[in-house]
Amino acid sequence: MPNNDQYKQGLLFAFAAYIMWGVAPIYFKALVGIGVVDILLHRVIWSFAFILLVILLVTGFSKIKKLFKDRKRLSLLGITSIIIAFNWLLFIWAVNNDHMLDASLGYYINPLLNVVLGTLFLGERLRKLQWVAVAIAFAAVMVEVISFGSIPWISLALASSFGVYGLMRKKINIDAISGLFVETLFLLPFALIYLLVIDSSSLELLTGDWAITLLIISAGVVTTLPLLAFSAAAIRIPLSTLGFIQYIGPSLMLLLAVFFYGEEFQIQKAFTFGLIWMALIVYTSDSVKHGIKQRKLRKSES
Image 1 (tube, one colour):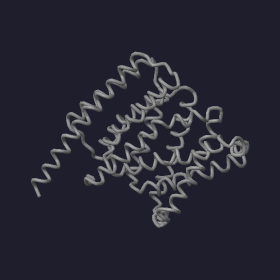
Image 2 (cartoon, rainbow, N blue to C red; image 1 turned 120 degrees about the vertical axis):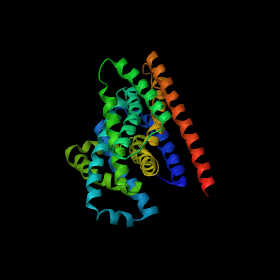
Image 3 (cartoon, rainbow, N blue to C red; image 1 turned 90 degrees about the horizontal axis):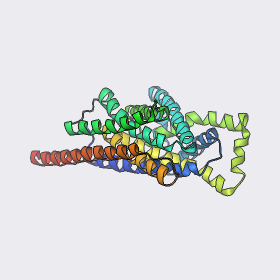
Image 4 (cartoon, rainbow, N blue to C red; image 1 turned 135 degrees about the vertical axis):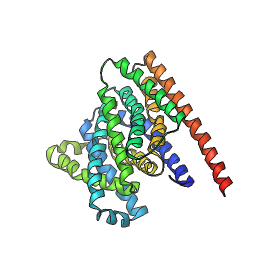
């Protein structure tokens, strides 16, 4: 179990990550008209550049050098780089093709998957009220699934890819900056080959309108900051706790989709939204009570 300071830091990182992810569709909507693959490749290149700058100015390369001597972790990071690239690609496509509500549903499903992964692979356990919260959240997601009348593949693919990514990053247990540096480094050659050899027209995005150029370069910051915060949170707090905080992201996406981008919001979505927040209230209140109880117990023992 993490100590109290680590837990508080993890919570702050988690809230920061999911707020940034929740408003990220605003950025990608601004890039409508640019190919999804082009956006993904520029995300990779400028994310690598931003992380490299952070390492040069802040952390240095000592941890990176040690990491390159660990073949097992490098291999696992090669796998996570593919998983997160797929997640990025699908998310960009969903947002820019008016499927933001589907993306929101995917990130509602993801915490449920995180709970399952945490209990199966990490030995995490939930208390009774927390399982009640899981059941309420599951019921909320099922309302959405049934209302589709078919399998919501976009939602399920986003949920599963990010759930597995989170689990693997927690198992790898390396600092956020080093991990992301290696992941983008794995993807960088593919991005450069595509842009320089296969379809060089994508580079013209950097020589046209200055506003578009600035948006493209900003992909590094938009991509990297929430991932850094998420990775830092994942090694400090239980995956199940991280999963429930994630509801902030899809909630913001849901509000953006309906009130800013005009996607249809049917009655069952309002019902789902209410159930999700009910689950959050149950889970959070139980966590707060448990935290108070634990602090009192530690004081009495000391």
